[in-house]
Length: 181
Image (cartoon, rainbow, N blue to C red; front, side):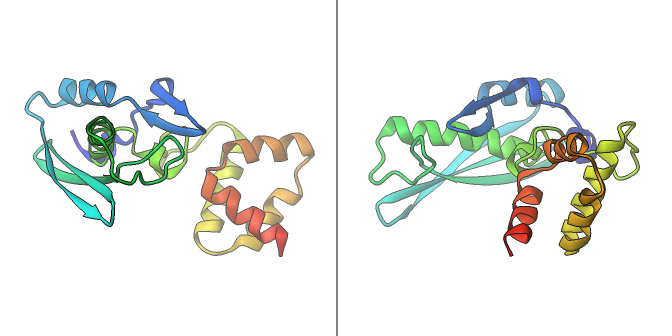
């Protein structure tokens, strides 16, 4: 399978939330990977110390390509743990495995702060609010924040809220910062 196909897989119903963060269970991600590529392999590389904290690494080889992810050993608030114990390191290693799998495309959009896979540029959504949300996102990406804001200003309150709910976290943040200036 190609990355373009894997990135379209909708994993939304398998997303778990903890302390406001979205993630995929490493076991679910691994199961999906092995169903798609029975020859996939993974290995944990040597952790690296950063002061008293630790960064773990995982390399996943699938579909003929190797991709490596890194992840600090973190607590429930996503802060690096000083002098982590074996359980904390193991937990980070399994999370890193899920992240390395996502580098092949499965669930990568979660790390972009989105709840749905990124559609192909050639796909045209049926919902007019999706079209507007895509336009706003594209304008933000190209640095036209004022135009993105103006695109939403002509909408009624219900449609504004609908478009807002479709935007990813980075786009929302850019619009919030623009309104604060």
